[in-house]
Length: 161
Image 1 (spheres, rainbow, N blue to C red):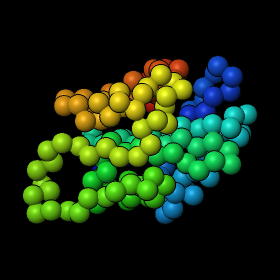
Image 2: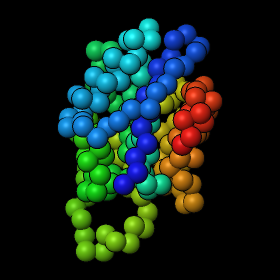
Image 3: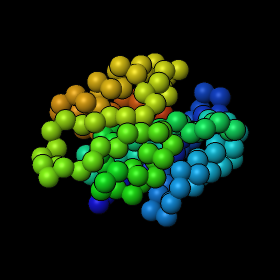
Image 4: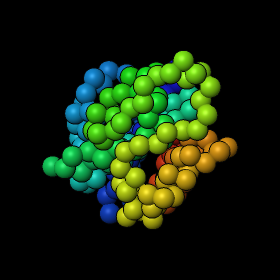
C-alpha cells in the first residue's frame, strides 16, 4: 500500500509544508498533535493534512489550536483496508458501512466527514463531494485542486504527488 501524506501551515500569505509518515499513528490525537506542532513551529494556528492512498481515496484533515480536528474522507469504505483511514474516521463521527461480499467491485465512492472544512479556501461542501464522487478524477487531482485554491500548489508539486 502506497500512502502519501503531507502537512501544510500558513504563516501570513506564505505556506510551509512537509511530507509526514503516518505509519505509527494509532489515534486521531497522534495526527492532530503532529499537525498542530508543525503549525505552531511555523507561527500558525492552522494546519491542513492531505492524504492519498493507492490512487483509491484521499483524506483532508484540518487542525486548529484548541479545536477539534475536522476530517473528510473521499471514501469511508477505506477504513476496512487502511489503518490511517480508520484512525482519521475517529474524528468525524463517520458512518462506516459494513463490508459486503460484493465489496470487491467498488462502484461509487462513499464520501463522509466535514465537507465544509475548506469553505474559507473557496471549496464548498457540494464541490468537494462532487470531486470525491465524480468519475474519473484521481484523488491526487483533487488534492491538487485543494492546494491550488489554498495557495500551496507549488509546495505540493515539489513533493511529487
